[in-house]
Length: 307
Image (cartoon, one colour):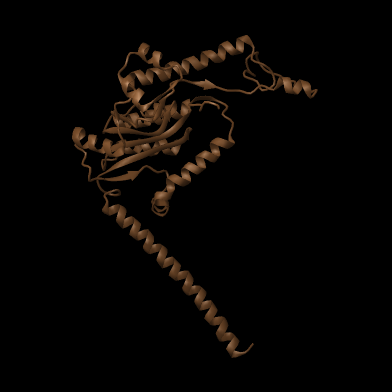
């Protein structure tokens, strides 16, 4: 190998190393600038508001519940904004998030701000807030519980397939994909649904300071617009996050100049790098999950009317 060839190879190696270290330096500077900007806005390390974004299908999320619980003990968090754009989700998932938000509300101001959709469990998580804001066109309410199960015994019979199921009791396979509900199974499952429905009604009655019988009149599963919900006492005002910040400043003494920190289950590096893209990635992931899994439990979920 000639001396000239060796020099060319050495130069290429040096260029590759230079590119690597330049890229690393640029990335480090970007992370430092993001961190400095967030610190300058008071979002990290100083007094700030927390924003909990509840989007897509609500399921049980232990890390998120722990993150919300931590807000109640964080003295730098002066208030919590719960931003909701969700059709609902599992009853247990809504309940766990509702209770976590309630623990924060017991110690500091909490407001809920509804986007285009805050129905079923999406409405449930708004209930601990001291003030609920909705847009006039928000779809909310849909107070109720549903349990869905497919049943394909007719199709199996046409295909000449006879399922054989062994159970320890007559209700163990209720509901079943391969045979219709029995009267006893329907009665038991309806009892489960009504018990969870009563729990939901109690949450609404307690959160909105309404009589339980009045809540049941409204809780037939229908959705309401934000304007209708306001007249029915299900929300407190028409407005957005700016309106909510103004209310917090006027009624709770939380300055509008304080920065806002989004509640996240990722570390600081992940938050700094993701920035405003984090909600996009999170929403896309939840959408994929919600479309790929069968809803096999009891759900407080708004079903869009079929055309």
